[in-house]
Image (cartoon, rainbow, N blue to C red; front, side):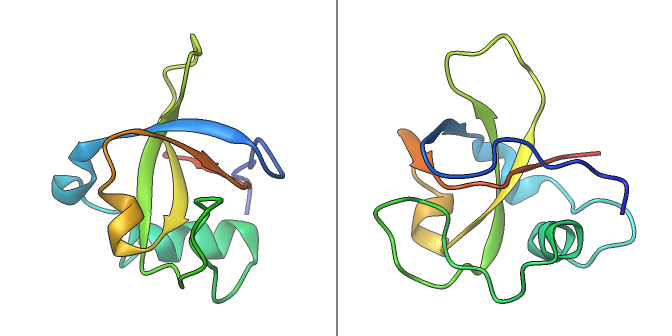
Length: 98
């Protein structure tokens, strides 16, 4: 895999993008979570939100909060955390959307 993850570790502040529900997964993948798993090598991920301990069921889309970086990133999330509208502290890695 040639996709580089960024922001390894805890304490990444992101803003969820609510367009994830209508945005298709990257080409060649059944879901954004599958894309994240394949590029990180982490099987059976947990929700990346630091205060959640549920299993990840989807790949949420977000941008880095308070950053000039407009790249959209994918991180593993449970259904509840993927739909949160406030900023979240998550643990990385996060993977850029192609």
